[in-house]
Length: 102
Image (cartoon, rainbow, N blue to C red; front, side):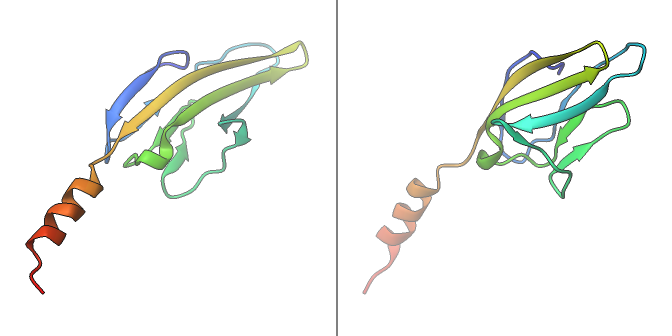
């Protein structure tokens, strides 16, 4: 998907948000999740083409993701909303509890 698009996906899905940039001088790109700077880790990865990859998305990854593009001539922020739908653990838990006999 491209930055500016929104997506709803199932948990354990990998999502790539592309942020294509061009300009002279080449703009710097940074990412935010709900306003906080994203750092690369096990589940949030940056690619060489400035994309953000959400690996094996979980409900906790549901957020507004913003690509910030900046060079000497200005700055632009573009956002996408990602919603991850997880399994309903409460229903599973209640079913298991109902099967336990004391």
